[in-house]
Length: 44
Image 1 (cartoon, rainbow, N blue to C red):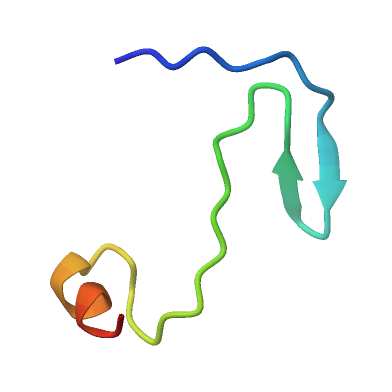
Image 2: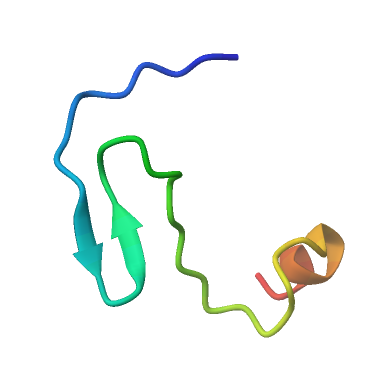
């Protein structure tokens, strides 16, 4: 699946780069690793 992304400039926020062709960055407040979907969903 391809998602159209609008052209943007790359900016650095701390050690995270966002914009341009960088992968989408998501911040979470979970106490578990987000790869563990079941444990993360139970925190909701």
